[in-house]
Image (cartoon, rainbow, N blue to C red; front, side, top):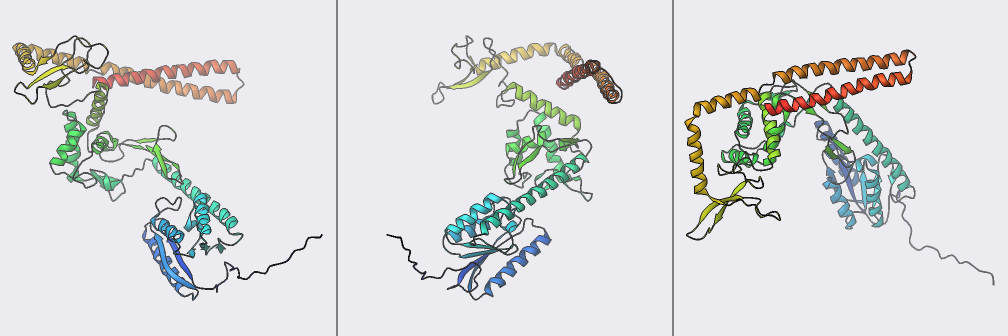
Length: 470
């Protein structure tokens, strides 16, 4: 038998997204956002809120829900946009039927975020209307148009990010610096835009450097600052150890600046990482007034490195801590309390490494009283030849700290590097203009490169030796 088809007519009318008079009133909300908190942008923000409030309330077929907003937030991702996230949550909970926003770029400049959000809302029957582009998401062409416009918005955001990055690097190359003044101790922004010293905070910075050179650890310095009631750079009562370490190692306190210590890896996620050579850095000398003398700052950096190499605390409660060395393994003796809750309580000193390895150290433990007696005996013996001992120490100091020969050799090496660099440039220039055997050029150029390498390595060695002597 031949097949037959019978049409069953529709009984419920399908509402077009553009239809202005659907059955029932649509619960309508709007979304407004500005990416900066400047005065001009805030005026635009207020205008958007006022416009959409009136726009929705004037429609008889729409029921006004609210205007969701985000101030000073970028649209490259939705992670920190609380107003946006609340609007989506309310829509998915069935409280909104229609969302109106100015444009695709106001909604999101990230193509993935935009499409994912629109699809979530479509599954719940919630429509989004982009006024500028005249796109309805429930329309058959809606997703295609959104994909195109979101991609354009994302590329626009990329272009803006690259332009801003270029501008920042140009400023760095010109030696122009800026600081996070709100949480930077000792400086404020001057009238010329450069860092200006805050006299009331200068002594705090200098005290931190003095305390560290005097032997205190960053932890002890943080406790002392808090106990004296000195507020942290963020204005808090307590000081973090990391804050003290940051101040001690920040070259800006000696009037110099290393720029581009970190960079943004992904403009969409705003992910940053420490610059380990991926992008250029710029070091600016005499960029602003110094709070700490350069020699003192450099001494602190040497002391930081020295303490790292020791691999042990450099400041302890007992004067004998990290001073008594095991004659068997070379480890340091530490204090231990025996019989702490008995009348036989006593403090003894023994090698910290005694029970850590498979082989025990043969050195015995000693009591604290014995340590004190031996120290006094040795000290008094030395005091008998005090003047001779001090004279020997001064002689050793003058020899160890003498860097005149090092400085002379460094000057010669730097001159050698300059000469070799010029010779290499001249060889390349001649090779480009005159016909020369490639083998002859390679041999000549490689000899210059080898001389440059040796001189550079020797400079690094001598600079390291000079720092140790200082």
